[in-house]
Length: 479
Ligand SMILES: Cc1cc2nc3c(=O)[nH]c(=O)nc-3n(C[C@H](O)[C@H](O)[C@H](O)COP(=O)(O)OP(=O)(O)OC[C@H]3O[C@@H](n4cnc5c(N)ncnc54)[C@H](O)[C@@H]3O)c2cc1C
Image (cartoon, rainbow, N blue to C red):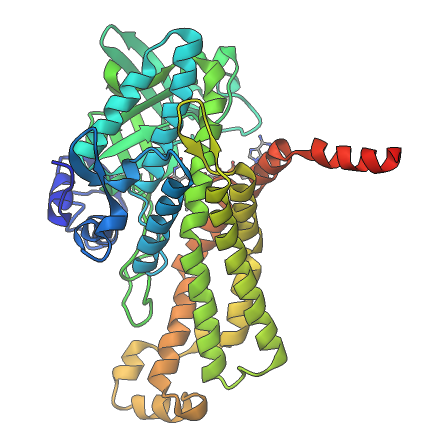
């Protein structure tokens, strides 16, 4: 089959999956008034694959399969593959008005990591996991599957390993082994896009010790598998109108508490089963790919900040003020540091024993850290330039009311003949991005998604070649 149409993708979601949202079991995620916004948003991936403008970028003729498939499933073998991947993610996020799609990006990050780590396991332990991963990648290509990744466990007490926790289910674990598979129990938090993907890829979230062997588990399973239950969060952005919320009314991600209530996983879908020594390596290798994905989808949102700040500076007649020029310059440097480092991460990738490449870990982590650490300050520059009307302005209803509209037109225009409507629309964009429920979601996304700030700092210090710098100092001291 190779590629699916947007309609085929949507039809595939009508499979009896168990999703709860605001206290109700959802019958049909596709037509649901709120969750359906996410479905429409991610269907863009399938639209782009059909669109002659984007088809070459988004698809790939797989010579082994003899079919055209989504390029997301091409295991990267050089820097050019990573640059293509980066461009697919940045372009689709731009077309999604700054909101990433994340229905193949994160899943393929997990598959690439599984391919590398299972290769090591097979070599060192004599297991046969890599073949299973390879077969699952082929299935993803042939069926054009969409995937979410459930890695982050609910974790209970963060200072304790799973086997030390008060409750045995704070990390997903194996509760039964059968000849044909395993049964798993537990829950993962924050699984983005889970309600509207075909499959969940489950990974361990951290390194474990021997006592935690039952928690060292990785697998892929259809969202409608018996025992999988999703409790979808309403907090990304409630349904909103396009005038007040120009981005989030049409684009959103939905995250779930993903419950595994004794779910059977057949052998062919199991990629790690008790090999606790490899759990940390798998978690880290996934992150090596996933932080690159992260810093590939961040730039369009940064561009929206620059564009909104520049437009409102013009509308407010402050474009030439030195502090405004300085804030715009800082926004540009914020955006281009992320973009430049993500490009560098692709160019400076490293080849692994299987022949696939991994983006440069230092550059990816620096980009992600720079983005997350500077996010709230970048928001403050946009808010400063936009002014207080972002949160005190009139509503669309007042704009449409013939009694109030003339006042709004008369009093809320901008500089050089800019009309009140244009100005209000730009202010609403800033509210949507920075001062709404969606804006708050974006702040948490910046800080926590793809790992909290500390995880990037740990990686940067761990992977940086400090010895090279020490050697330089020692050479100078010796001379
Ligand atoms: C919008 C969004 C989307 C996401 N999407 C996904 C997804 O699709 N799939 C997925 O698997 N995950 C996803 N995540 C999860 C994300 O990776 C986690 O939020 C992140 O790793 C932090 O974990 P946490 O939320 O449990 O917070 P915590 O780990 O509780 O972090 C809170 C604070 O505790 C600190 N902390 C934690 N443990 C320790 C410790 N042992 N010692 C000292 N300090 C500690 C952290 O550094 C941080 O400062 C998403 C998160 C968000 C916000």
